[in-house]
Amino acid sequence: MKKFKRFAWLFLLLLPLLIVSGCGKSASSSKTVKVGIMGTDEKIWNPIKTKLAKQGINIKLVTFTDYNQPNAALSNHEVDLNSFQHRYFMNTWNKAHKTHIVALANTYLAPLRLYSKKIKNVSDIKKGDQITIPNDATNEGRALHLLESAGLIKVNDKVALPTPKNITQNKLNLKITPMDAAQTPRSLSDATAAVINNEFAASAKLNAKTALAREKVNKASKPYINIIAANKSDKNNATYKKIIKAYQTEATKKNIEKAYDGLSIPAWNLKLK
Image: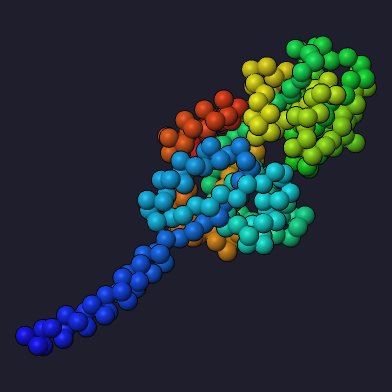
């Protein structure tokens, strides 16, 4: 009996240590992954975040306000993944900054659109009108091709990513003004029209149905499909594969369509013709 009491007393002394030890083990099994996104994507990632928490993966969303920040943060290991860019942007960034960022999975395709608060049709654009476009290399080129497809200008077809210097015909003498993509919605108060990326169009509550023109969706759109990206050293990370699996679901597909009001197209199973 004395032996039993001694054992019981010892157990009570050790119980707090066993509890702390058990809690520590549980905490260490939970993995935190920082994901850099643009603010408008929170609506898409929050349900995924909740789903992954049940699998022991804690997603911490880090929001950015312009395209120059998320890749720098990824390369500096301030975030583990980012989800904001397309492959063309990533490749251009890697070359310019000597980084090693890779695409892990497709998310959605976000066609550029031409918006205006002053006119309702492309045919209403007059001589000397101002049109603003994003100034980052890839989206600037896409914007110029959109203006070309709308019949407003012609660009040198030998240049993959043209700049305003590569415009070969501008019959209306339009003032095409590159600026930070985040500022293009604000420019609508002064400019006749603006080519605006979807996340900024969504945050400015612009209606896709009122756009004057939209970028064509075809095989040429493939490099512009948005991605989840990581540093090359993490391309085979098992936890990141679980995150991708949780993202690429029917529920996320519906959420993308709802969050962007049809502006963006889920793209992991998208067939381009």
